Amino acid sequence: MGCGIDSLSGPPFWLRWEVYKRSIIGQVRITLATCDIARGRTINMAIDQFEFITIGSGATGLVLDNHLIEDNKAQELVLEAGEDITADPRVTTPALFSTLIGSDADWDPVTEAQSILGNRKITMPHCRIPGGGSAING
Image (cartoon, rainbow, N blue to C red; front, side, top):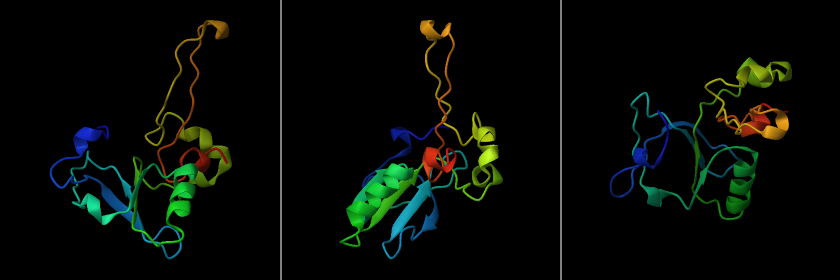
């Protein structure tokens, strides 16, 4: 089941996310959450508890978060669509990264057929795990 706006409901805007890590960057409190609607777990967090909310915990998202909150120790919420599989051998062993392509950890985007490529479609791996594509692309 996807994680869309329909998974957010009710005043004051409750979020359906499973929280799996806290205190990601130094002394700044960051809550990293993964979408877990399929399992039916719901954690209610009022939206006004956070100064910043970032969607995605890829390299860019986490660098941006760190920059936004480094001076003021703000409350930060980072939402990640995937599970934390950063200790999985497919992530920690560079030679196994290709086993993640097309898996549950991959968004699995595919281009439209390109005439210049003989009508082939190209797969562009983008992982939905903490670290994003950087976690699998070295």
